[in-house]
Image (cartoon, rainbow, N blue to C red):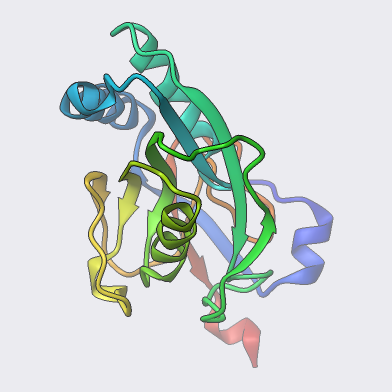
Length: 194
């Protein structure tokens, strides 16, 4: 895979060759997830909150599938960060963009790309509780249970994966690879880091 010059110069040598979850498996699992969650989404005031930036593709596909079941939520986003440009969480969650809609009394479904340490999703849910939501449920595309630092489990999970760095379908490495229609493993050349 050809990578852009900025990424080549900014990060260690790496490869994105191994597709872990292909496009057809993602599509099928999104449909299954919607079937699992549709009854919980029939609230009078449902708000889907995507955690940016990684969740945007997953959220868009979920919203389109929910529409087929007659579900018409309000949609908003929060931008939270704990990674910066690295591959390891800093442990500190920062709000870069907060909600713009009022969620007081609403049923909220939080959509995130990956449940890793648990810090980001717990932070988002705590923030939404403070805003007066009636109910909160969570849906993640990927779960890495072996990485959990904060006890947290999503209500709906697409795929459990091992502890590896992945990109694609909205997930990035230093703002690259979000456009890939599949989930791929990133491998690093250890010899190039010395």
